[in-house]
Image 1 (tube, one colour):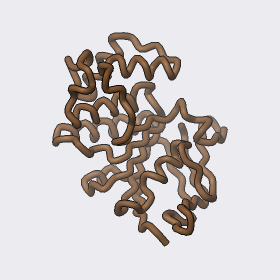
Image 2: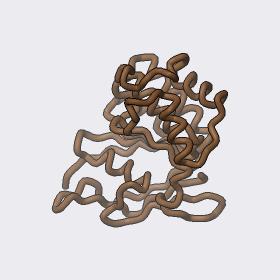
Image 3: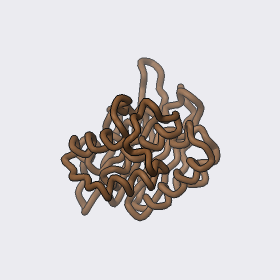
Image 4: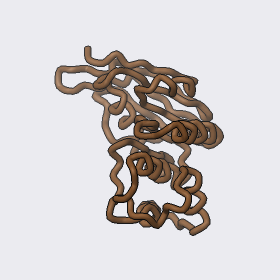
Length: 207
């Protein structure tokens, strides 16, 4: 992905406007961090980037090789991670990732699967049932899900919630690696994550 453009984005919930007339452009290799109090619209804006929610007005365009597309048409290029991302607790980590690879039409070799689990700090735990995982381990598995298809756009909602200090190191490594792959957008309440930002957007909330 070469760039993402937001043009005059507004998000309303009834009479309540949480985001008003936001326009910006993100270039390949950049990181955008969205901050703001709870209810200010951080997650809503991230869902607009993902094509999971339509803005009340305005447009989002993904730009690659001189061609524009809507988020819904670029989903194969988007990696998504959020605290409420559903994982199948009765399955193992490997079974979860193989299932999602099948859904995406991907062939996931054993070596690639093991490398992905190692990358997110779950070495040796791939065959464990997710129901036995701690909250931090489960969140690490969400990282593996988001990175599974090597996305050019990575969307992270509260990426360090439930993680220990080693988890913060994982986040930094993921963000750094993603600069070479494309664009990263982070919605967060953690002030430590503002250091990643090339573009910092602070949402004030309801108007």
